[in-house]
Image 1: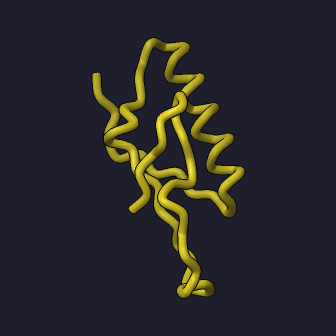
Image 2: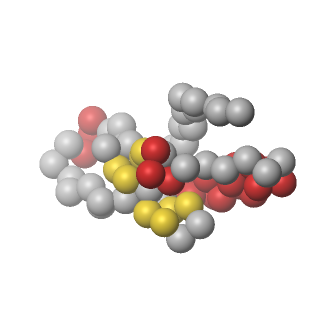
Amino acid sequence: MNYDDVVLVFDDEESLRKAVKKLNEVFNRYRLKINPSKTKTMIFNQQYEDRNYPASIATLDGQILEYE
């Protein structure tokens, strides 16, 4: 069974990290897996357009989630 195109929106990086961790825990409980290579993170913030964003803002089971 596959679950595709789930969008999580948070106001800050720490909330995103906690939610990804919790979502992964719930998925593991039901023997489901999130594929880190197909999971992306994104920052929406027009106020700070000149800021250099990090390569990643979250991890999943120690794997860096790609930033787009």
